[in-house]
Figure 1 (cartoon, rainbow, N blue to C red):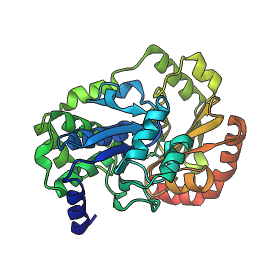
Figure 2: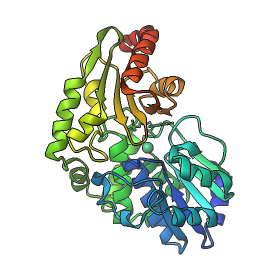
Figure 3: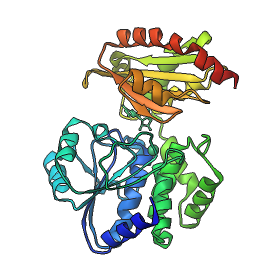
Length: 343
Ligand code: 5GP
Ligand code: MN
């Protein structure tokens, strides 16, 4: 985003506007963190602003400032559609292609003509936004919102709640500041967010110390189901709908499970396959360390995408067939995986 565009956006936002902020389906900490931070910032300028989320967030995000103000499209389709249709400006945060919001909301987004502003850190964005600030090197959309406010010369507007939202997004998308996308700039930004009132310890506890007994039992089952393919430095986990039901699965319960597979010594490529009988799909998460691109892998074989080291996808086949296909595809990448492992 160059200076000219920043000037344009400043001009655009200098008068009260009808603004909607949209993030992707199955919102995570970064989706809600960036959306709510921008929402709280825009409210300070008398805009009519609403966050519309395709569906609800997991319980571990329910404490976030102003999250109760979010319109959940799945629950309030009429209201959500009206807001989108009447918006002058729509911010698209933490995703870059309309299909990421789910079919019903996608249909609405495709027929309206507001000014779209995309702020996102995924690769290969679709070309629908008038203004785009896209950088796959940045760890999180929340960090990008901070940098966006910096470009607008508005860092002074960051209050405790905005800082809390941005901190949450950066924390969750960096795996608590562990992933290589975490830079010195990330730490400098986070330091400033703490100065603005974000309480790192309590945010971490809000997100992580909410385990239920049944979730830990489900984790036990997932770990039991885990298989390792040594020759490909790969490990994967499966969870059937029956297993999810047995352990009273709730949204968000499987968050982070795939990282256990990736934590095995010599494993650099991990996947988790989760059966969703309601949507009739298998939802897949891929993770890698090093140069092996799970973004490419998910795009090429499982209708998905994401980042080099974290991506997702889906399959319309049964769980058994999906795994069988996966195990047929992976050996084609054996050399690439070996190379990445040896680097
Ligand atoms: P997760 O595995 O945590 O759901 O997602 C990891 C990353 O991949 C996130 O950045 C997410 O936005 C992206 N992602 C997850 N599922 C999909 C998908 O079905 N399609 C695309 N394009 N990206 C996905
Ligand atoms: Mn993100």
